[in-house]
Image 1 (cartoon, rainbow, N blue to C red):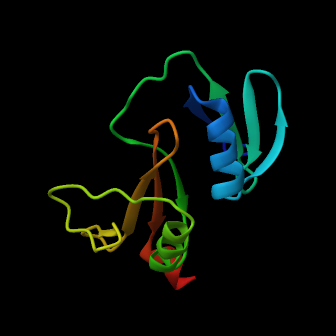
Image 2 (cartoon, rainbow, N blue to C red; image 1 turned 135 degrees about the horizontal axis):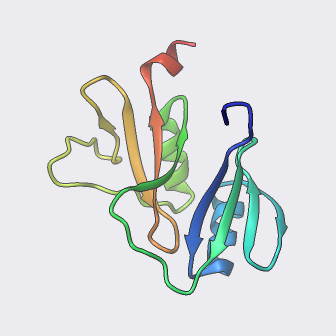
Length: 129
């Protein structure tokens, strides 16, 4: 029913000024507008609403992610731009934080200024295209 409609993603922030700079300047998303409730970005034709909240729920899972080609190179570039990638006990990650899943997908996690968990992933099918 909704497959033909645009997706809108929401990320909560208690630090709207810091978050706006992070998503715009560090991650390179295009800021479309601000409406008093949210900073609205174009995330490759997905509307991302960075919603200002009084108290953000802290969740231990990924809230937003990007599928990339050449994850190792993207991670190195982002690390050079000041982004720290997470290391988790029990996951066999490389020195840069990239984990290879049993099916061959590669994933790396990082946080925004509010501590929201974000990810990069590279899937074998994408790499073959």
